[in-house]
Length: 153
Image 1 (cartoon, helix red, strand yellow):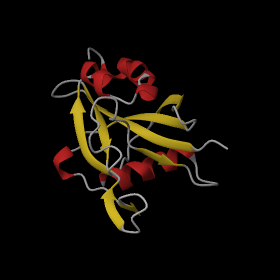
Image 2 (tube, helix red, strand yellow; image 1 turned 120 degrees about the vertical axis):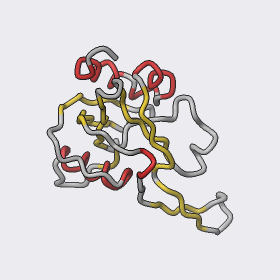
Image 3 (cartoon, one colour; image 1 turned 90 degrees about the vertical axis):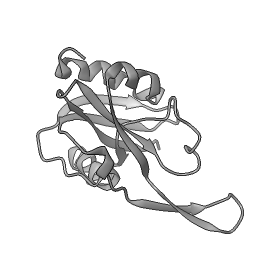
Image 4 (cartoon, helix red, strand yellow; image 1 turned 180 degrees about the horizontal axis):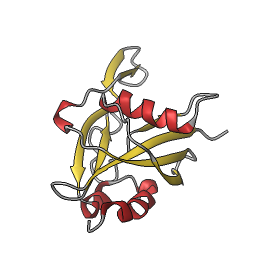
């Protein structure tokens, strides 16, 4: 059964229209830049409302509470089959002050050693045009869906 995730594409209109994307932490993404940036998102727990999961994931990955209304952006399906329910929220965030939860994996593989990494190692505000060049390909439709909220991006 394919996994279901939920996340929020944060946006701001000032000082210039921009969206906030995150770079996943850990060794798999360490050397990837183009095609790696994405919305903060994560697994929807059983019996958890999708909007609640999206808010929880932003809090876990950025250390930010999204309190305003969420605008549904629909669903996208990622290459591995995971479906992502996405929302938009207008909220400014200081990307220099983000705090992400950590995860632990065996690293290097088959070494028997455990290493800890942040779920998100960077967050950046960027214009939609730049986001189109850096965003995970399967999430690109979300940029088309958020543009009406940004005005002249």
